[in-house]
Image (cartoon, rainbow, N blue to C red):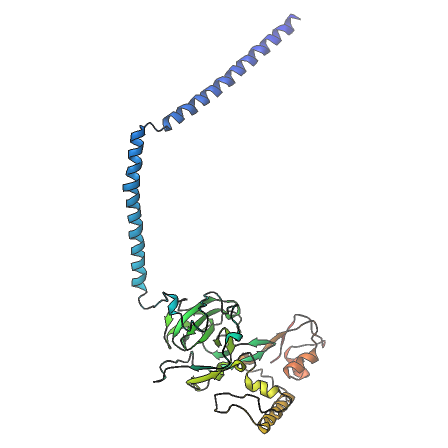
Length: 379
């Protein structure tokens, strides 16, 4: 019994020692924190604090502002010094053809959603270049046309393609101001310029851009380098002419063989717009009519006669009845198509006017079947 009591007393002493030690450590930590706070206290008098704050406000802060202003001025001088050749659009009043475009100036996309062709007059006379010479126009790139304007491979092709080599200079067609210059989806690296004659021209698939939005350009200025960026099968220039954000066939205006303008003045109406050129519309008519417009303003004739139209339709029907010859030598002429669920070999051959045996041979089809999403050659 006595032994058990001694054990309990010993346990109580150890417990008390441990408790006192813990409290002592807490006290030391608390004291250290208080002393640290005391050392951070502002011991200045009220008057001293006020005087120091006034000194910062009127002297130190002013010096910091002056330094920042000097740095900004130096940067501006540096940018001007390194870029003296570029004229930049500074005021909205400098926007070309701002009246027709209702003061819209968008630098991130090609079209504006709030303007439609209803805003276009019934007929608009446009002078393409100056009265005194040809210096107001420069052909963007003097190459061979590889693809025309119109429907192509099941989708609208809103410009013409011109063959070139990667790195070749591409030139502004008319005087104007760059509205868009950036990578833009299927166009790849593209530049869009609004001109003083109301047109806009677009240049796509470039390997490098040489201009920026808001930059003024003259006809013949280098705006980029040829390439194959975006939705492209090889190096070429995709060239578009637009009016009021809608595309028209560039060959209404530009002679792609002789690399010059077809006319200095053109009268535009709503029949010029859309992906089907007027001649194609005339060819597609099942009945001859005197109101089919062909090459309006280009050859000096506004309409074709019934006999001329009948000849066009007959020529088209003969052309559609002929099979396209497959060229296995020139790979640049090869074209491909992705098979859809409803497609068969017969429907694809009919659409692209190729023989079934040629289609099977060039695609190495052994079992006589094709699969959905399969990539097949059609030219």
